[in-house]
Length: 442
Image (cartoon, rainbow, N blue to C red):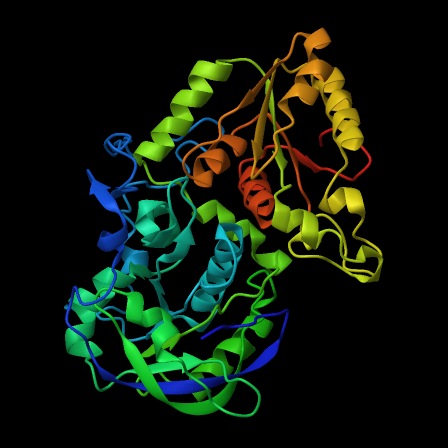
């Protein structure tokens, strides 16, 4: 079932009652799509061998510019993780989960951050769903577990969370058995609609299937930076509508975080810390061997065919476009062509200004299509600057690299850039955007 999600404060939803629990292995699971190497690392079946084993970082150790020692990487936050949890691990405050099934990885992350904020406000443990899909050079990776990319320990510093596979295999059989489950979904028009063949929860392992729609209304526009009175009102609304005793698990078939995300939730990015997978090792080795201790600038170019088509929209009529609120206020005419799809002359001009200012020795280019290597090398060769482009198997490696650059230039309308910008903000690293006047890095 397709889901359309906009910047809505109040939406209609429907409740679905589950009736079966199919046998494990009867449908695709994360293990059907990924080869697991070491401790939960994932790699594609077509990429042999896997890049390596999971690394082990000592407690408190960080990466370059990543807030060394800020988090307990081992996840030893037992008081936070198990508050209101019974001896068998069940949280009496209830659970909430969702399908991050709209858009690319950047969009899914913004939905995730909104869901984290909502779970915290309504005081329910967040069941961490897999990422709906992750692009890989060889083929699309489906249902990638949260822990294959991010660390549980860092997120648990903020709120109680549990991976969906752990929940379904350990807690659900006793506390949320088949036949006693309710799911929550958005209706189409005035009628409830459900297409089970496309339903996200059927692809989990073990699968979960819902039916019997019951419409109701709830608010999802949670700003965790709002005052306590506002958050208290939202918590009371949810508690009165769905008490943990009557509705122990709120499982939505769509995102419960608004896209583009609410500005007050952006700082939650600091609780998303990359897991020590082989892909993280690839990024770290690349940074060390390519840049050493030199100053370097990273840029993100979003210029694939889909993006070129999207940016041909009449931008003058829009108050914002996709993730663009990260770099401007919402008002008609705020989105320009160079904010969405910067011209080559503009990119070269801004890049030259930056290098003349910061005296960096390297340029790293991440892109979904055209890196324009020849143009940038001709521009920067007189300055003695080397230009680099990796084109990794998965774009998350680019994200890991972009987040650690000394300086960064991003695409304002891109949620890929917004991930980088939030991470860099959390770590005190400066960023600017294409399409804006250069006033130096703050």
